[in-house]
Image (cartoon, rainbow, N blue to C red; front, side, top):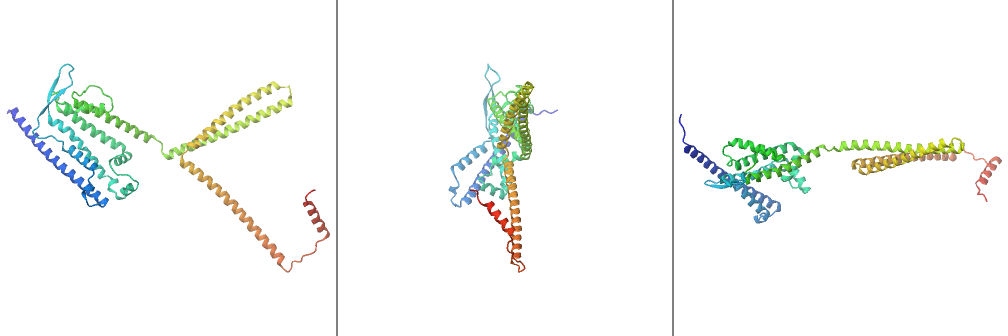
Length: 407
């Protein structure tokens, strides 16, 4: 069996690593050029919006700082020919142990900051950004279609999918970075096992469990662990907020419960009012009996009066409590129900007013018809006005004397 020398294997590995670094460097340069082109197009669009032709108008200090920050983030990559750096290990408390860590590992970690390009891609390909009508409505309402707006929209529409996608991607990226930082501290463990161990470490740290079976031994690993805990706390709060929003009753459900509660309070209000009247009647009844019978049976009647007086006091207190609860319910009721009730009451009053108006109109029409019929009768030539008789004169005189004011 032929054996390949270790020097040849290392040379082949170094050649592949060197070629990979050159490819990463070339792609990084291309990415920087594309970022400059993107901002150049953004400046041209801003010039069209402002109606200016001078390019310096679109180059603000904020945009310039944004371009420089993006170029710095996207320019970080492992370079060919980099050496090693002494990396302290924090495992031992008494001895200072160090390992030689390739500088390429440290340059690989900031490359994950390029994930902001995915956020920009999500904004540019979102339905809110591509739809001209939606963008017009957003501009009229002074809303910018940016990454926070798109993320909040997606969280509102698909919260579970968004949280699962972000959490899974975050675990994978952080586990890979932790494996790169920690794999040189324990050279006996294979790389895949390192990666799986730190996926487990990410999960338990993300949810603030922390069993302590996997512990980072470098400053880089501990910084990443702290970042994982902070992001995990944020995501946990977001999940609690989303679950709380999902558990809230809808507007129709709140209205149904409000109508039921109001109906129950109205029934209690009527029952307590009836109880007050009932006990008042009993007290009045037994007092009448006490006045009627005198000393005979006075103790028994007085005892019953005291019982109903106590019951009357309790009924009055219950009536006040129910009235207060009903008043608070009316103050806290839904605006839609309040407007609906006011509308219904107004409609009922208007209906009653129209009904009375129609009755008055009908009575006036009937009176008009009778007056016209009387006018026709008096205007006819066959109508003969006879002189009043003596009996008629006496009746008229009696009526006039009756109407005279008394002296």
